[in-house]
Image (cartoon, rainbow, N blue to C red):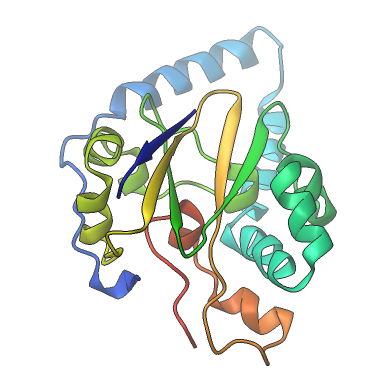
Length: 211
């Protein structure tokens, strides 16, 4: 679901600080207990679990950056990415499994940012493991209430006329932001564009810096 809030960026100016409380500790304990129980019951083996971890280890922001750079340079792919994100990223070997990927586009008038207010739902097959601050209670609670203030703490100050849309991920829906292509990149190759795209811009807390 999306929340519209009337609401450029330099990730090196970040001042956002997640809460110090380890609010996810209980989830880690539950995960370990459930995993051990499932292995004991024969639902999957320890080796199968290890193989699954290896798949996730190969995931990372470079995959999302590849999709972004392709969308910037290929209008047909961009249309596909925005209409059916799950199908579009399969071209890069990314399987969203049982979740649906929605890609939202930043424009000069709209800035998108993603959050998971309940836990830490995140497009892991495409972006890898979420950063610690994304999982923090501070980010999860404040982003929907005061997105402009939180973005400013990441160094992202938006003009008053730009609308901020906050997208809340769920157990079945994942979001990725298609950031705006920075100026001065018309002559760059797709590989060079990929190198510009960072994880935080695909979450929406920053923008892609100009080269």
